[in-house]
Image 1 (cartoon, rainbow, N blue to C red):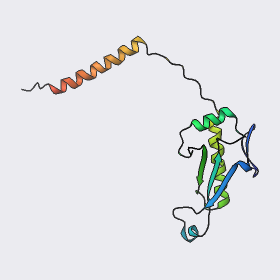
Image 2: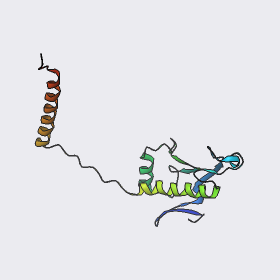
Image 3: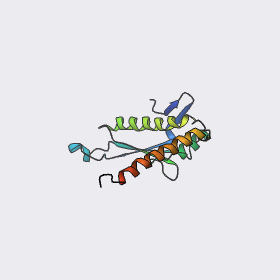
Amino acid sequence: MSTDVVTISPELAIPEAEIVERFVRASGAGGQNVNKVSSAVELRFDIAGSPSLPEPLRARLLARRDRRLTDAGVLVIDAQRFRTQDRNRQDARERLAAFIAAGLSVPKRRIETKPTRAAKQRRLDGKRERGEIKRARTTRSWD
C-alpha cells in the first residue's frame, strides 16, 4: 500500500490528509515493552465530511449500524493486534479499506411477496398437528 493514499478500488482512493492516526499504548499482555512503547494505532476517518467519497457510498456507510461509527459520522478503528507500530498502522488501514469496500456493493432491492394459499394452509396444518401432540400429553390414559 502506498503511504500517501489508501486505495479501496481502482476508482476510489482516500488521501492521507483525511486520515487521522494516533499512537497509544496497547492493552493486554506484552511484557516489559507494553508500558514503554505506543504500538497501538487509533485511526479516525470522517465519513460524513470526506470529499473523496461519492454521496451514495457515504449514505450506505453512515446507514450501517457499526459500533466503530460515532454519532458524528467518524469511523474509529483501534489496531493493536501486532507488536510493531508500523504493522498495526498497516492493519488499521487495511480494515478501513475493507469497511469502505463493503459499502461499495449496492444491495439488491427486496421485492415484497405474499405467502401462497397452500403455504398458509401448510403452516396452519403444522400448528394444528403440534397442538394435538401437546394436547395428547395432558390426557392420562392409565387411570
